[in-house]
Length: 431
Image (cartoon, rainbow, N blue to C red; front, top):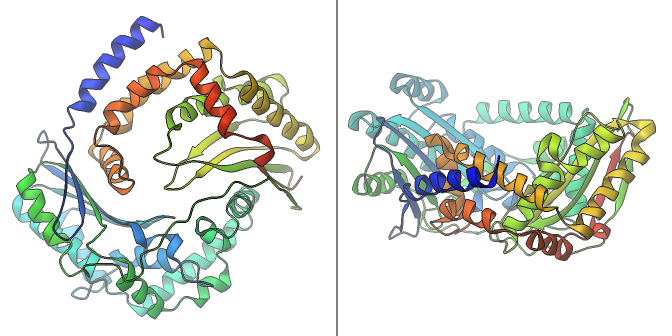
């Protein structure tokens, strides 16, 4: 893709992003609302996020309580048991799902915008948010499923490697809470713990509501008010995320009976509001995020044949999220493959990208950017992210502009300042 074509494509992309016209406001109760009107189809997508409802707020020794609180939102309400609730969802032909992660929990809805259908769908969503049934039998079944899933994961060396690397990246930090989940901690969670977590963490103030589709601001404002009805005004114990401190890297070797070794190199690095965000993103594409064109792939796979695949990823969060390099290789080749990966990283930090590499990264990042929000559901995810991390309303518009403006020196400088090889934590499972 040449420079002229890239510039032309950029001009096509930016108006589309700007045309989103993200409407953003705060309710009297302190909830943040983001709306993009799309009237082409009679569909509305909605998400409601609770910043205090993530793993960072798990109870000591009871890892998983936040996940149970989120998962069981859609398994019945005070008015409907699990079967009746699912029947109502099927009758309306809507999609209703709940989820939790490190920093928040969420509930999402897709419905036809026809007033009668959307009103009834909103009522079900409101009941799930504010009046979850938290049935004892459903809870016990869900906990048993979680135990089984954990046991299965613990037979997977890739899972073990990732879990250990999270512990090394975030010692004594809430971001590592989920990595300490065990069968014992799951069994320690009671139904009363789940109910108390919901009462304490799910509240109007701080909630982030994103809406995309066939409704206007007046309709959205009324709908948001109904969705949050019945929740406490404020969370009783708002979870705080402390800063992530820089530390010298450590190495862990974990024996495992397998043909291949799983290798993970990682460190805390990037936040959602990071001033080096775009330089780190572009650099990561060149290093290991660009598939077969990346430096890691060319060296470890094409040149040496150590791996079938290798990648590097950036996982931004409110505080420093992880930078991760990961691959699997034959046990006998693990030391050489690890050494090669470290050398590729050191050389990239020392020299930075070439002009050709940076241009290729720009072409691919900008060229594929519209695909990130080509559906209402994808755009909904970005609106939720913008609201949750208080990003600028024009973040989507600015993204390709910021990437296009990068120079080789920008990328080189950011990686030299921020990525210290001596701070990398290294986990080898089965090597």
